[in-house]
Length: 169
Ligand code: 4NP
Image (cartoon, rainbow, N blue to C red):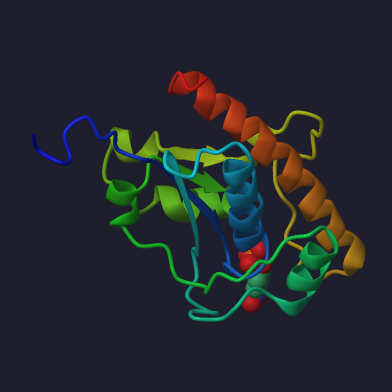
């Protein structure tokens, strides 16, 4: 028997922000934790990228890492720039704000690719924060806490949507 027979393709999620050092690596870390907690690591893959390459190779912003640590997360991915091949490599491309949306959409080559792009706040359950995850980079501590609150909520909502769309029980 072919060893790959019966093996299902993974569901691949890519979180995208501007720098890939604050919001999207936090979303990646939070979602990875939720996936693991639900025992779905063989079914769902998670990654993140930035629409800019300004921080390519960098660890997440120190402030985001320390706010995350207080909640038990270890945000440790390295920044990379979003690339056109991400449209082939991922099933859900989840952006943090309207600017990220426009940047990613401008690289989409057709409806199928454009349809993969979602705003993170589409998945919010408890929060309705102006339809975006606010950029915390130039602000203070409360901005980082708000981002984590919004992301924890939206990641839980995202898992519910994925489970429903892919009949995962
Ligand atoms: P992020 O935040 O898009 O959530 O990673 C930012 C990180 C860096 C910059 C802006 C936003 N920057 O101007 O370098």
